[in-house]
Length: 387
Image (tube, rainbow, N blue to C red; front, side, top):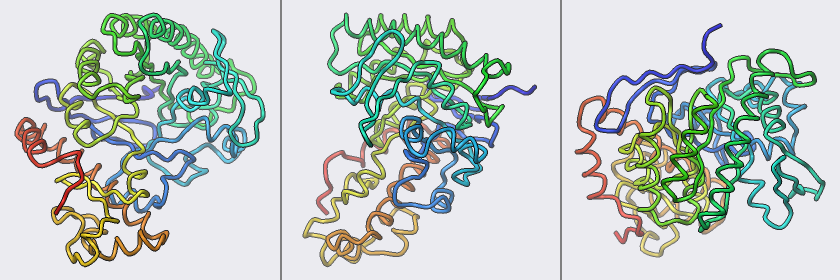
């Protein structure tokens, strides 16, 4: 049987890597950004829009799909790819982050997490094994283990407990994953025999805990590894330090995924530290809130200065929105609360992110990554642009 996942590094620039990730549903050129389709749909855009924007892989959320419509139903429909009519790669997270965000309605033990549904208050329990079973029925190409997401800031003791529990859960999740693959999990309808499983590194902002987490998680052995527990409120320079400490300690021949991180400058800085995969809701969430991301920074479309502005949102952008519509028109749509505003803004932001990753890949291949990195920081600002 062919490996569930293959990864080839084709070019390097310092710690930055360009490569190809091969899954059961196709290839992904890395570094890559994954648009977030929480409930098996990326908000406000169609699958065709995603493909036109350059999306290679999407992320779906196990927690939400388990609650509605249910993993059993999706399995009966042949798995998530068939259910949502997306024939490209899919990554599913374990749902851990969403469960742990239900601070008032969940209980964590060494066995797993008990929580109440945000939909109807019904009681549920997810263990490392249960999260693995759900994702097997969903049939994603990449399944994430259940991990404990501790709040930030966390004391060393709290971060250690979360790291140790995550490491224990990772071993249990891997054992269950292997049992499913061997056909030794009665009642689980695996819909993708080519599924791979990623381990997750935890440890808060503490280098010693991150190092220990790497050791314990790689000893279990996964197809690839993710860095979790960041972008939860820590200063950005601290996040960069943790990534810079952790990524080089992971196996060089396996993909590295930074979970939930997101501003455009974060992407380029974490690629420089050895990260291959990213996801974040920021492009679509900001779009729905009227914030368009450009090479110069954030454009807040509702601002009065754009009421009579005939320019596209980003003159350097080749997306449908920027090729077709003015800032004045987009402002009108947003203030009128037209659904089209969310669609056009989301199309732009997703294209901007995906095109940024394309430029990064090309720069690594052609040996100009450091030039691109410096140019990006010269022009991009997190502050709202004023022109």
